[in-house]
Image (cartoon, rainbow, N blue to C red; front, side, top):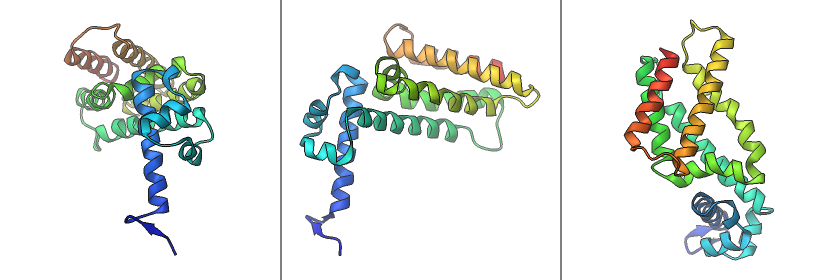
Length: 196
């Protein structure tokens, strides 16, 4: 029999503590960057003891990777959901995808920094960040016209992901001072030209 305390089960309380730790990790990694994320800092931010940290994660690196994977899953879902079937024209697909990505990554810059900036500075994420690029390139490749041969689609998708990643990294890092709508319009134009 599952024990209930204050209306919640032990599993529910564990899941809630894990969410608090992940939220704290997102806040710290997405605002102050990798050096700010330690077990002690995450616990302080989540208002939990280290005992509860180690109930959920083996170490700091495992937490950082879990935060990153959660943001990756949200980004992948946002991009996948943005373009319905049957496929609308290339410009509409590009606008929907860029808008969905911007809403997730720029409207909540913590997520953008975790996805795009943290892998550059955090050794725990470097290899994982590189490993995920093909998955995002595959999403772009699926939207390119079938009249392009497969090699051209792969090359174009890989180049677009690289260009867009650099644009968003520079924007989130403060090196690109352009209005949000101008950034969106530029990214849409890049994608639409490639898929037109």
